[in-house]
Image 1 (cartoon, rainbow, N blue to C red):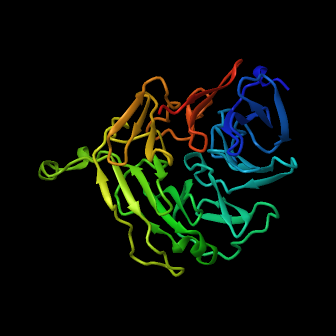
Image 2 (image 1 turned 180 degrees about the horizontal axis):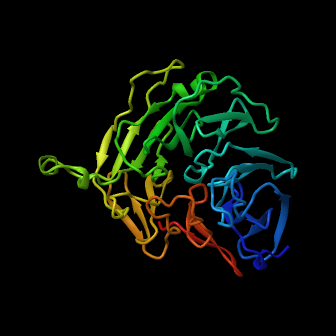
Length: 364
């Protein structure tokens, strides 16, 4: 199959094979190598829609849906980011398991998944309701979290720690306000959503903010600038620090009532531009080999940043796709024209129609 004549909607690297990528186009998941115009069909994925049908996905009829690929070993999960459908594909066998979530404000909440390695098995954590995550065995499809205790929380982008022992939901609560919640995998398997604790930093209307794990128990968030919400006395004492580092404590299996996770340290940095509301947008990754952060912005390029906030390198021609405007989540902004970063291979990548995958190595 030649994908150059098709509109590729999403691309992601095979985390085991350098130079090999999965692409999604016209309801098909395929594999393509860099420097090649030929793609190998992996599986038909018929439940993934590229155009909203109206009603069930919380979108205007006829509007494009953004497609996202999550890769872990032989597994690829395809999601409608602001829709209601997903599919888990076993790329070794071509088997496809259809997944779905309920439509309640799905047009502003990312349909995200995370892969967990536990006791020699691959598990998938994904949304099934607006306020519910379930963990299933990727091979068998067995649901390991049948019982339920809900909280009033809208799950969105998920982030998994390198050792799979913790994960974050980069979501929100009414009215609305963004709130990151932290979970222990073991505690969640028996206590579900109430076992999580919220991050103790007041944000605003900017969930799915730049976020990355920099260790098994350490993660970093990019913060908004809240100066415009302060009075004169507060402004005089205010210092904006863009990066907040958090250390995850041992989390109990019971509900940790009134417990918040405060930043371990705040770091001066100014790589993510702030929009008119003081919000930061973009992608944040961690490069374990150098220990640096990779900050991808839409208009200012890419920054390689130390954990102390120092800019080590800037790549002005490596930019992410433009994010949605304030209050306009659900647009198909994260297309394949923008760059992304693959930490496992230390390369930037993007799909170019008619040319295929383009790669750029992370500079030394």
